[in-house]
Length: 294
Image 1 (cartoon, rainbow, N blue to C red):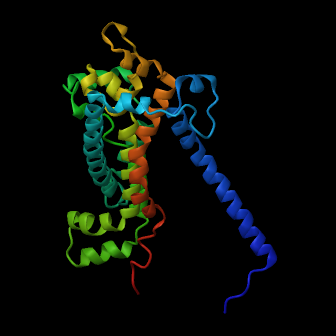
Image 2 (image 1 turned 180 degrees about the horizontal axis):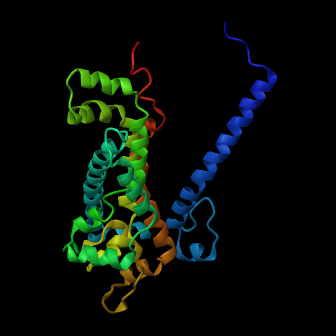
Image 3 (image 1 turned 90 degrees about the vertical axis):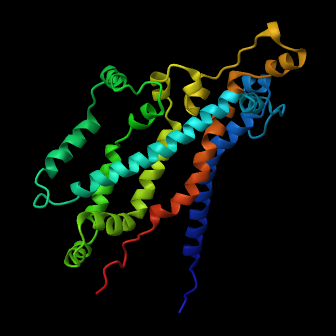
């Protein structure tokens, strides 16, 4: 029997709805403001007169970026980096987390390796030794420098280890009775059950590789090999009037670094905004519920 909501309960639901709407607006407004600035003219952006709608609407900032062949080259490098980096992060994380999720009785050096990982997460060798390692391995000016520089994310490993350790022990015992080996249990048992946490770390890896710009700035010697974030980080308005037509000069004179940077930020966030809805549902999906039947 469904009971009618009381007046206090309805009032609470309305208040909760209002709070959620306010939170949503707080999250959306910076993105909307960035879009408005990117579509405004130079004078309005410099004067700070842009609020919720573009002032002096124009597409000059986006045209400047999209008509540049270097933009598409860096976009392709970032896509390649995201794919390779996410696959490597996924494989290394799973292969590290599986043995570390075992007890000390099954893996005697488990605590030693775990403390080594935690130590490396808290302390590192510094920028110069890291750069020398990348250079001595011959990874400079290659896509592998961007991919392998962050190949092991210790925080991801810890997340997956904790998830594996919380899986019912009865599942592994049943698989052992049926004659399953470690690789079979990892591929056919642990990985399918760990879809939520694996989807989470995959999203983290995608966001990391897509937004990271410092490695490209340090490890790449030419702009042709820059990933997208490094490229747009270095992109500024430079007007050379010596070999420029009147129309080109008029178009570029309407640009400013403020409107151009706003366009950079908005373009850079689009791929993540597109991918996130497909992985978000795994964050709250308890896939292990009911996996052990009586």
